[in-house]
Structures are given as structure tokens and as C-alpha cells.
Image 1 (cartoon, one colour):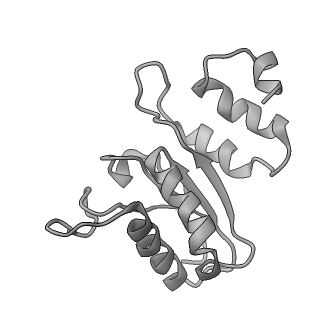
Image 2 (tube, rainbow, N blue to C red; image 1 turned 120 degrees about the vertical axis):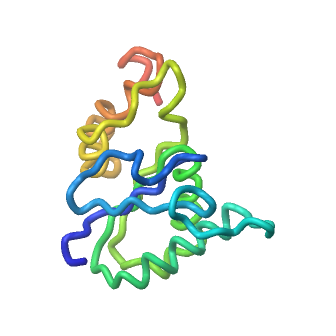
Length: 146
């Protein structure tokens, strides 16, 4: 468990093993998908899923972690950051991509993209530009104004 540096939460109906394998990145399974817990027959929300993941992350006893969420996983990660932050290590960071990587116009998320994404520095737009530009059909000049 000591080599885990990050946790990835996939998008809607996406199995964790569909995300690229990167050494030290633990890919979490959402309920009712792949090997995720069977929550069928009960109503639940993204807040419930965020709580589930946050509690499981806390059980890992990590000293630092990067939580990466894609699409619906990005929404789940943002809920973890805002509602369950106290359960994670103090110096945890979050990388959120609230879009769908499986749209026809978007490339698949590659291992290289995830690695670059995980190392992007907060507040440093240049480090995000390389990661975000493939997902948005606008020029780098337009991206600079965001």
C-alpha cells in the first residue's frame, strides 16, 4: 500500500479497469459497475458514492494522495473534496475532469494524459494547458482566457 500515490474514480458506467494502468494509481470501482458493490434495490446519490469512496480511502492510511476523477468520477471527487475532505490525508490534492472521455470528439484518456494531469500544479495554467486542450475544441489562445 505504500506505493499508492493516487486514486482514480471513473465515469458513468465505466469499469475501473478501463482506465489505463499506472503504477501507484489505484483505480476505484463505483457501485453496481464491474466489481463494485451491489447497491441495486436501493436509492443512492453521488453523495452516497462519495462517502463510500472517502471512507475506503481513509482505510488505506495514506500520508498523501492525489484523487483523480473523470466525468461522473469528477463530480464524485469534487463532493469528496467539499464534503468528506476531513477523511482524507491532510495534504491530499484533487484533479477533476468533469467531461466525458468517451465522447466521439474526445480522445481516450491515455496513461500519459493521466500522469501529466496528476502532476499539474495548482494555479499554474501552463501545466494544465497540455492536459485540457485535447478535450475542448478551442484554440490555445481561447484557453488562455479561461
